Length: 148
Image (tube, rainbow, N blue to C red; front, side, top):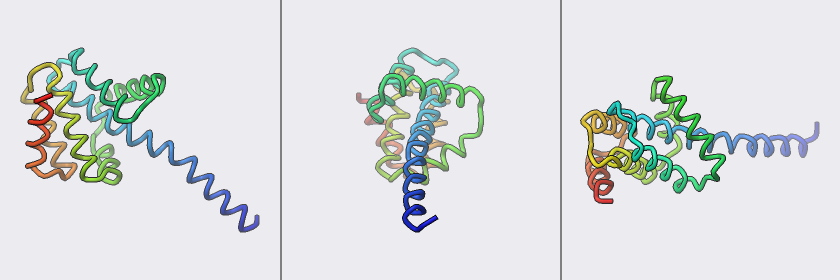
């Protein structure tokens, strides 16, 4: 195998991995959003609608891709697997600004039913800590999401 063939193989491998990396990032965000929606043991339709809209607009997903992501995230969330693997993905891949936007989205889902349950707040606080988001941004995201 010549040098050009090896380089072409590496480029193809990198190209093949990129969509999976993006899907993993989308799935990690979606799982956290589902966790917040389920935190108060009342998966409200307003929360699900808000979750769906956030995923569609943030990632500009086509309807089929959105439905697939929602179903996979729902399964992952229902299985109750540790969130640390998802948080590791997010900590490696997201900038500070993107983490803030995710935190805002988590609050937005929690506020969708018109109230914040203390379980939702506790979970979002824990996620913010594990994402290394400063407390001031945690508070700012809560207030900004609650105003919309």
